[in-house]
Amino acid sequence: MGVIEAGIAVVHGRIVEGFRAPFREDAYYDVVLVPGFSDGHAHPQVVDGGLRRGVRWRNSYEWIRERDMVVDEVMVRRDLSVASKLSYLTMVRALLEGTTLLALTGRLAANVRAWFKLRVRPRLVLLPTVMDRVGWSLGEVVSDYSRVSMLVSDGFARMGVFIHSLGMAGVTTIRESLSLASRGDGIVGLHLGEGVSELEEFKRVLGEPPYPVKIIPVHCIDDDVQEVGLQCVSCPTTNIILYGRTRGSLAGISSFGSDWPLLLGTTPKHLRLIRRVFKEPLEVIARTATIGGYKLYEIPYDGDMVAFDGNLEDVMSGYVKPKLVIVNNQVAVYDGALVDPQITVEDVEKRIREAIKEVSEKYGSGAQPLIPPKPEDLI
Ligand SMILES: [Zn+2]
Image (cartoon, rainbow, N blue to C red; front, side, top):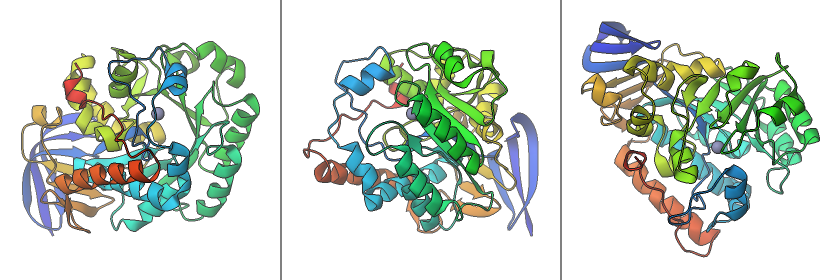
């Protein structure tokens, strides 16, 4: 048995100097994160943001109505093999970027299938999306739910439901989704206040706290969810891409989400933008980007660690790739490459570009969806 040492570490959201922990060999790194990064909101099957050059929308409903989709997203979801391949690439990319926890929306059966393909898996919160639309109906999610709930009953992943939004799901769907979520781990996510205030509507439909399930709103650009005792996941990058604005304060925000991990990367790839948007001290940003997501979703973090060569400032700006990624005491990434199969972050980025091209040919006109700018180029 050896010892892993680091000059500086972010341990459970606190910056500490001089870090030591048991490891299978002696090793020294400049920076260690315990646990690794968390991505509190990610759509692992999104390959097309429906973007139109030079256009921004007022809110999520206007975007959904008017966006320019090149790829048929219903067909992508239905094709379990394609959907699970996209999810697999999302998870591999996450591990290589140092993201050890992902909260995934999208197609549940596809996400679980992808997860089981990995030898060392990231921790997951599985929140299949429900809305009153063909392809996302509650009935379809219920059938996936019954198929996988036994498989993920070991506590390493947690299950709930993601109600797309108050405007895309009727009251009956919302009530039934709450009861379905209670069959899992009682977690309900939803997009809220994404360009338009929805808190009054939220209170009208779901009432005042306390709520029978754990509700986690996402985006919250126009609503202060602390008013109803909740904490939000902020996705500043897609807020800026779609609406040209985001919230500038971390009050009421417990975690960051990438929203579109295949197009934008997971949380660490957003840190440069996050640091420019939010003026809170480095330690607060570091806490939100790492343990914040774990605490919000109540996920254990024993044995999760990411190690880097470089300084903390660069690590927390997303400039440095991790050398070592450990989840639940198992080494997922060693010397900058996934252990099994041997893949680097450059390899997975290439495979993602190829997959987007394939999906666009299979379920689109063949035209490539407009790729969004990198988060760091946005502001
Ligand atoms: Zn979303």
